[in-house]
Length: 316
Image 1 (cartoon, rainbow, N blue to C red):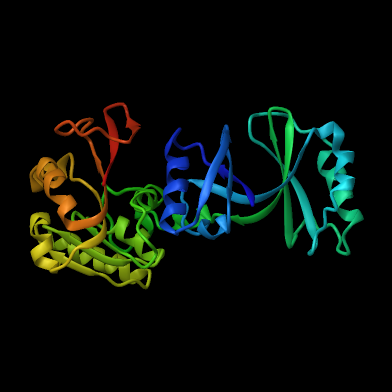
Image 2: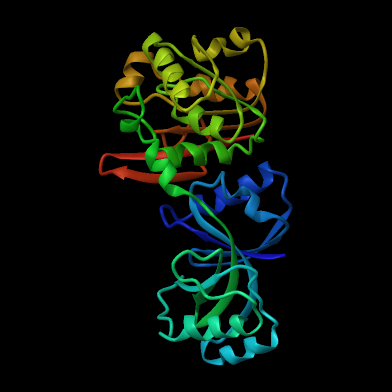
């Protein structure tokens, strides 16, 4: 089946990388066909099943037909049918202006073959006409991502907070980049306020975390409990994780200490890079303020403010 995924534009590379990693994590076979701006076309089965995991995508649709907007009449031969009250919405992917009547014209083509009415207020079914390079790609919306949920989990909405905390969307992206399964085990050895563990727990992972500060350990437990999650959270050095927990993990994901936190806990970067792969048979994904670590180069970088760039590393 052909799909179209509408990506966010928060980063030039991370949204597509997250999509691909998440599909692999959920065991969904796929093949990227092409990328046009923020729209990705791919072939796969049940791609919409990953929508609840994604942080940097907006929606997933099944591609039905592609056509020139002025030749919409050709849709009359395609037997398009809606099963529920429906609406048609255009989505400009590359700034292309949609003809004002396109939604109405496409809706009329679908209405001819359907036993249901158009419903612009609360449709049970939504058709998308993505406009790319002057061509319209008519698609049936299969799933969208509830990005507002990430906003509701921001630092200020948790019972325990800290000034240095990842945005929930970024925390979820790091989890997805690790390709951990929904029932996999994930360790954050510098858990801080628990933002990464929170996002991993919400997709079903078994949670393990540690921090050298008792306050952070208690705060993480409090934050997880606020979202009805449980985890094994301990006050411990990251280097003691294997002995402390007595097990390996399916993934290790963390935001390494930097700034004041780095001064307090010491700079663990080089030791972490050396020892973290021993804790998992899967991937190690971490953020750092260093643009190179003993010859290891980051997969992604993003600008935070004029004096700070953060780097995302992925180790296998």
